[in-house]
Length: 345
Image 1 (spheres, rainbow, N blue to C red):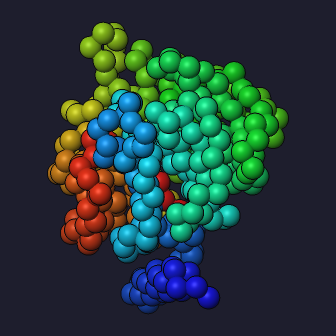
Image 2 (image 1 turned 180 degrees about the horizontal axis):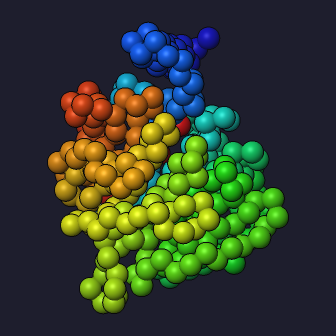
């Protein structure tokens, strides 16, 4: 067994042992049986925009960083070319079952696949796109392409080898897989669902006069969290966090006093963490109650596994914050970043 693999295996075992111990302690304390938690991510991957230049250079310095479940930096790959965008949607998709990480390079317009050790496995050129998501049953990756439009062009499906296998006439800015509906939700100015088994496209309803920045699904209940955005030139647009039922109907909406930049869902509780650009992160329950808030210069966030808290990316570091609000670990970026994207496995 090689050195890097031994390190990764030891950390993975430690994470699983910690989760098992925590669960056993909960059962003993309450003297009642509880279901085992769904396998959470073993860590997170962060894509940054540390290099302020995005044209005119032979090589660029944006990075893809791999962290284990305790916030230790496992690998960092450089040479990406990204630039600022209007939100932190899903430019990274982790396929935990197969051990792959799919990444969209912004300006470089590449679709890339890595293993969880940071080794590049595949690069597909000329894929200008906003967001992507993995289809867990097949391992295919669904990509929202664009052609200079703020609202996208098509939903394109690539297989594990990077071969284009399907195209759907659906536009949007972010995408997420829903195991209950056996399909994908797409958000932009509209809310759309694509069924993977039939290819049927369901255009549910109009969402906003401006657009929606991000989407996340609670797989256990089918609740869909989305973040509509306000624009001064778009009548009736609002900064909100919304929770949508599986049939597309609105469960509730909370008006925000800051710009929502990202949303991530706790797989166990269904609560949503919304990133408020440069302000902090807030957690809302499935009934719309604000549970907690952390003030910091946030760019994006991802719920940590087994209820351990939340990962928050700031301009200078990636921070693991515990459920009680303590900073468990901080890891500096290679350089200061203006924006970031994050995903967990």
